[in-house]
Every structure is written in structure tokens, then in C-alpha cells.
Length: 210
Ligand code: SF4
Image (cartoon, rainbow, N blue to C red; front, side, top):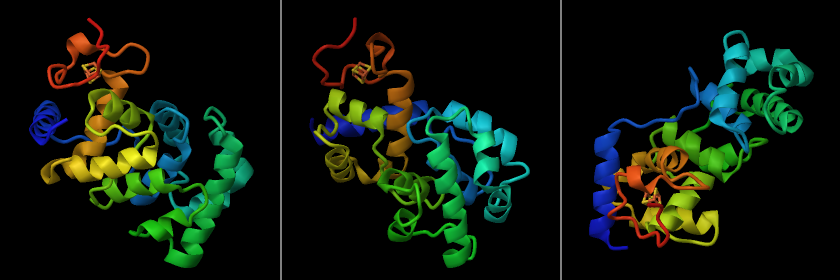
């Protein structure tokens, strides 16, 4: 795919949604971090249903720590891998308080050192909370990047690197959200909605749906 096409794709995605953001609900950078940890292999919807119940009373590292691992597990039972996630969240709260004064650090290395935080989670937090032009390649972005031809790659890291290289600079900050939302609602996994897709004439997917 050439640069002109990529630029046109992002211009259209931007025109359709000028201020994209995450669908996770949060009121602080800390809550965003916790919501992203909980969202691994789970839907944003299921995470929001759970966090709505406990963020109002347990929305800071101190409050979550006081709730404890089993207390938190009770609140997130409906989310996949909840036991591991409860353990990671509580350990993350401990680390944040011990090492960062209860604040979420604005750097990749420190973020990735937190339990339950990998490259993808760090990218989401750096982008959404701190405005860094990072791209967290999840299953949706991976699919869209490959199907469209924007940045084909065999692994998430390869796709992330390519996206960072080929997306025109003015679109880099929001590209992450545009691609996720496009994959979640239009370029869906089983049967992409090509007839309703705003970039179908630019997309290079060989077997578009009619
Ligand atoms: S045309 Fe189809 S395959 Fe291409 S981006 Fe749109 S929905 Fe996805």
C-alpha cells in the first residue's frame, strides 16, 4: 500500500470520528491502568460493568489495596482470568505505592515492570493517558492492518513497528483508536462489513464481502 492511500484512509477515519478514545470507563490514569489490565482477553463492556461497581468506592491504589485480592476477585468474577487479574492488580497497587508515590509512571520501562502490564497495556496507557503516539496492537488492529494492507505482518510486534513507520505523523496519536474501533464494529473477524465500510475502495483485502 502506498502513502497516498494510507493518508486517505486515515483522513476518512478522522472525518468520521474526529476525537476517538477508548471505550473503557475511568476517572483517573490509575483507573485506566486497572481497566486495561482487566481487559486482557475480555471485552471492554464486561470490564465497564465490573469497574462501575467498585471504582466509586475503590478507585485509588490505597482503596483497592484495602479491598484485598479476594475482595477484588468478588467484584470481577464475570471477567475472564479474574483470579490472576485480581492478584496482579493488588500487586500493582503495592508497587505503585512503594515505588511511584501511588502515581502511574509515564514511562514504558516502569509500566512494564508492573504485574499484569505488558507492552500492549503500557502502550494503551502511554497513548490514552499521556498522549504518546504509541500503538497497542490487539487482535482488532492486527486483523485490520493485515486485511487492508496498511501494515501487514506475522506478529503483533511486527505490525506495531510497521504501523509506527508508515502511519503519517499527524494521525499517529489517534490511529490506535481508529483502527481498534474499525476492527470492532466494521472490519469484524468473521464477516467484515465491507459494503458499509468507509474505506473499502482503498482497502486491499482480496476477499471483501459483497
Ligand atoms: S473493505 Fe472490508 S476488509 Fe477492507 S477494511 Fe473495510 S470491512 Fe475490512
